[in-house]
Amino acid sequence: MSEEFKGKVVLVSGAGSGIGREAALLFARQGAMVFGADLSEKGLSETQELAREAAGTIQAALVDVSKETEVAALIKRIDQEAGRLDAAFNNAGITGGTFRLEDYPTDDFDRVLSVNLRSVFLAMKYELPLLKRSGGGTIVNTASVAALTGPGGMSAYAASKHGVQGLTRVAAMENAAQNIRINAIAPGWTETPMVIANSAQNPAFAELARKAIPAKRGGQPSEIAAAAVWLSSPQSSYVFGQMLVVDGGMTIGGFEF
Image 1 (tube, one colour):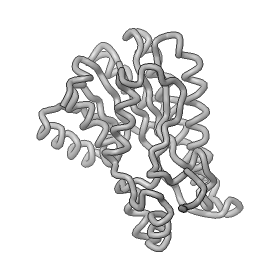
Image 2 (cartoon, helix red, strand yellow):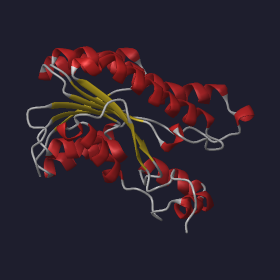
Image 3 (cartoon, one colour):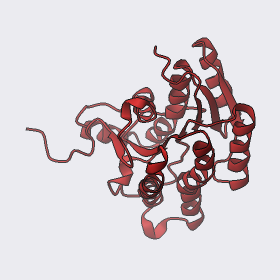
């Protein structure tokens, strides 16, 4: 394993499970000082233990990423403990319920937008000044294939993820000249704990989704994490304001020959 991030300070939200956990571990294995944020104390502890087994370290932070005071306090802590920030992976998110738009509970809609979209705004608002003081760096935001499509029953989720792409592009434009690269990833059907739990409630839909993916399988969290880490690395040094779709071909369109 390379030490591409040796001496670098990295923030990963949603680090207690799934894509966030795999990214935090990959950054740590490559030498980074990682701050892992999540609402699950148990999940963060498990991630920390996995990092120790891989000879890495992760600093845990219990944070509700939709709350401005908590996001501001996290960035202040990183500044105090590490003195810099080189990369951030704003990944925490929820799917919300599935309802036709006219039946969607307004409080649920607001909650999904708060956790998935407001959190990305808040994260970048507080990350950017520290990245600038550190001489530049990268931000990767987790969008979704739902930023490209209109999945029925998921109006809040799709709206939030379309919004993440919009925020990413604006932030990339505003900061490109200051040695800060900002991009997004768009995972497709990924076998995270959240997706597996949703699939258990609707196995027929899950089976249909897998069959519709050209690769004929769901993605592994580690595969999505690898894309996020690549976008955070010097290997992607000329990639600005893009959304990298990692979906097994789910959004190709067309049909099999």
